[in-house]
Image 1 (cartoon, helix red, strand yellow):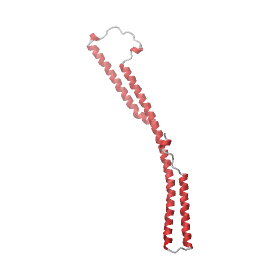
Image 2: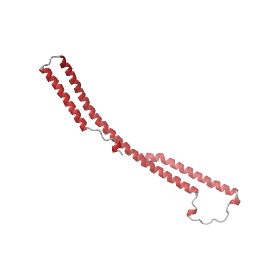
Image 3: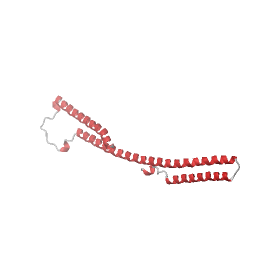
Image 4: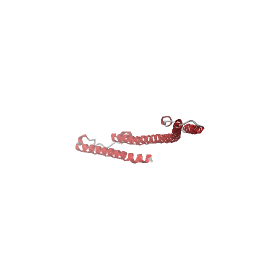
Length: 172
């Protein structure tokens, strides 16, 4: 899909450049014909001699060939660059999704552990205002165990959901 859109965007510009080059070369040939017609004494009226192909190469032909080679080179370079950009974008997208998933799992576990800590501190505050009884110690121990269990679960979630390696290490 990227190649198709690239070609749709670039080929018209290459065609316009080739068309302009062709029109300029035709204009130069017409100017040369006019110059020969105006100054017949400078023109060579002898019978044309067959020249080898390498003698028939003109400046216009060389310029046309160079423009065509540049157009082909530009298209190839653009395709290669677009493929590299696409590969890096896909790699970065994978990293971002992995990082977001790990962050979500870690955040959920930490939120539960933080809520358990808040509950524990609330119980400690309530119990510290009264007299210590076996019931209050049991409530405190239950809140403490709940906090410790949720904190252990948060650490387990962090271990199970490590952050992915950075794109500079993976994407190249």
